[in-house]
Length: 70
Image (tube, rainbow, N blue to C red; front, top):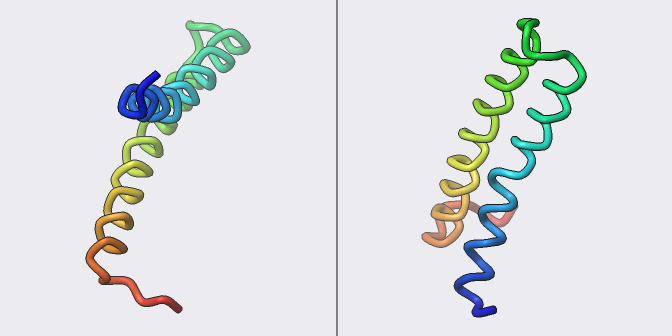
């Protein structure tokens, strides 16, 4: 497998698999007819969304030398 395809696969697994695993476990345990799994799914989506953006911004700042080495 080429490095580009491996990078795409690695990104996809790291980005989406935790969300799917958490959703599967929560819905299987609590069911579809209670409100708690939907709140958990929303919070997981929120944290995953901003976690990616924060990681990207840190990478850009490190690349441009905007962060100190402290």
